[in-house]
Image (cartoon, rainbow, N blue to C red):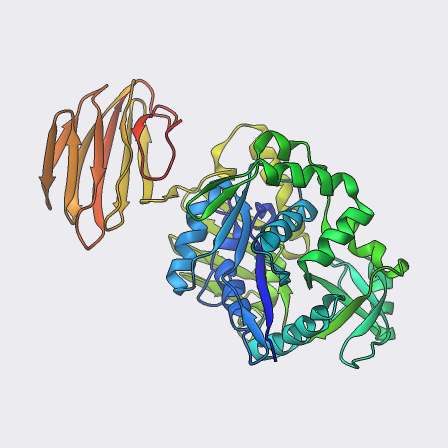
Length: 484
């Protein structure tokens, strides 16, 4: 028997504004460790890789994500030692229907018609074995030409999710017909759904052949299909990355997979859409209350990460990243501490955190975009102090990595090696510096920092000058394709 070939498709875009201040635009929630020991993105990559069976063959994943996060994707996959992925880089957000269309066009490039297993990168499960069993069942259903969706068995009346109303069992007995997709309900309606028993949460995980998706998007939204095909035709490959044409992509209507296709399928006889029940401790970590729901709690219902002391408090979540947080006499509260921002919120109103992010964005503040520690493809830097005409950074460069060959118009820099070995290009000189050695980069001097060693390089950088913004960088050469 020929095994079913599947292509995992991981939707890794999105900014996760409701999980601020831990989630930021340039390091959003899918790349954070919020539950367990792996990031949400790594968790879904592992879960999809585990779908392999005697009758199921799993290809290297296809990631659809943001240009800004491309090296985070590769770094986090490398940590798992998974096969190299293809990364489709969207030049701007156009929601999930165009993203899946890109993945389907990529999947059909080789002449095969694999089953696409489409999953979001911001979900978690507590029962991996039950998840694998349910998703393998969905793959087998989809291999015959149907559209399969995972419907989560609800354990409470939830107003934050859409629902699926199920119909009769299909011919195979393992998947239910989808009768209707239902919008997020009010509390009374959600309570009725749970009591009636044939309503399931919409997990947003879809399984179908690439050709079936293209037939559906062309049937229901030919405008999205045509404009996405045009963007795909104008694509440019770059190592593991594929970039659709930017101007063509901008012309694509933004629409979700649900609104564009899935919600229309039950009423259209041309498409067979089925639901496989999923009971695996699934959670969509869309807001801090959901993180509290899946976290381990003490006898008073409190959950905490990091250095936290709680007294006379209950049903509270504390997430501390850089210092001690003390809590006394609080109930039903979210407290999230980072080096540059602290959130305190009523747990029942955690969805409203996105409004704080909107305020930061309107004010032009950087706390909605960057952490104090900023990840780069070569490592990271942490802005540990700043003032009028100076800034101090702690910089880590990964073994074998290097920054771009660059210069600054408005600042000079002093570099002091804390640990490791630095190869420094300073004008016409190339120096090797080790622990406790330093160098000075004058204003306007062309320079580069590299780590030729096998252990991380750490330096302290002191900048001085009239302007210290990150946009005062003129790049001449760059390993990571950032030269304009």
